[in-house]
Image (cartoon, one colour):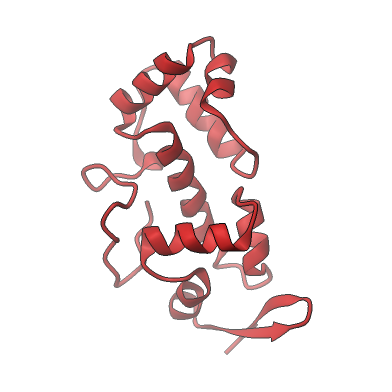
Amino acid sequence: MLPIPGRPLRSGSAQVDGVSPSQRIAKDPRVERVLEAIRSHLEEHLTVGGMAASVGLSRSRLEHLLREQTGFKFTDVIHGLRLEKAITLLGDPRLRIKEVASLCGYATTEGFDKAFRKRFGDRPSAYRRSTFGQQIAHSDSGTALTPR
């Protein structure tokens, strides 16, 4: 996980021993294929059953292997990778918050905002302003950014 510069992670954030899902290396090639598929399809609705079937494993076996090799549950891996992608996308001033949410697989901006605040302790817009020094400008069509 990419921490917010100058801010501690909230308790309950998706890290095990200070390592995020994207930093863990799976030993089983099937688990690595699942992790790559998740990274490639973060904007889609992903299920453990679908991922398990794609690599020839049962749902329970994939859950066990993921937990054993990464230290994370399937849903924690997805949420962690989505939020890591969000951190990167928030650096692009051309993208609105709702676009970042959608590109990271969140159906609503509210759901994205809630997950982001739970993980990082701040709203995506506040993170963007404090980290990238950009000012939010509101318009009828949504939130746009203008550099300071």
